[in-house]
Length: 319
Ligand code: PGA
Image (cartoon, rainbow, N blue to C red; front, side):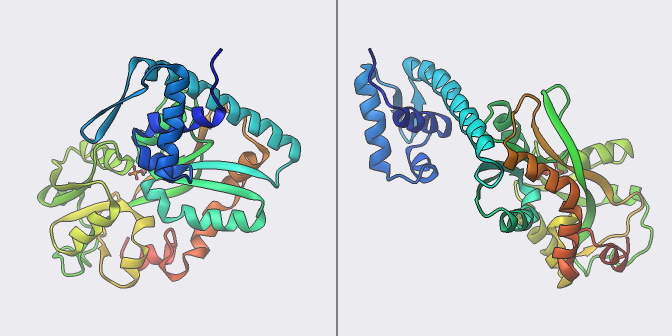
């Protein structure tokens, strides 16, 4: 009979998933020696090593892989159990795990602040990551709800759109095309674009746009953040196509301008997504309803004169 504790399994599952003792310590609010100790005790009671260290990287042994499989299933059952119990206690308590794609992080904290003010008993755990990792998290049942662009079909997900996500062409104010009205789309073929990493929703939409208009996409630097794109565009390294949500501040301070290119903005949408089979807690149901009913208004007014989807801003910058 094995003597292992749920706590050991939880720590092990996290180390195996994150492939890191230090990140597990951070995630579970433990010290690193405490994490190592839990894993060591688990290895002792099982009688087999679970991890192999090679240089800085850690790998799962065969026994580790088996245990990872079971510990994930156990973690997911425990989550579901917590959810069922939370449902019994009602809406005002419980935990909500939310994952958002990096671009949504420009408005998600504001929405969460508004939601948490109304429901102070709900603890929210917010993870910001890229589209691919987010889809993996949904597939592994590691998050309750996600905010992202349209998810791919055939993944057993429920996705509802709650707000527009206009993509605009940004340039430094001194750019030759700045202020020009109705720039023909084909002119974009002459420009260099700074682009997001493969796997980004913004990048995918941008590529589809160029393909649909049969214009060559000349790419310059590739980066995994919207911030780096904005900086590089300001520095004159090329143009960018980004979500209007990301540039409110730069437009307000005139560090960047939106080019008035025909067929822009590209209209994407933000979706609230969860697994079809997910049993959302009352907190989860309520947050989803809150997004569907109120998110668009809150982000509009809350962003004040820098308003992400504020129509006056769009006209002002020539869209
Ligand atoms: P991204 O997602 O941050 O991965 O580009 C935004 C989107 O899907 O529109």
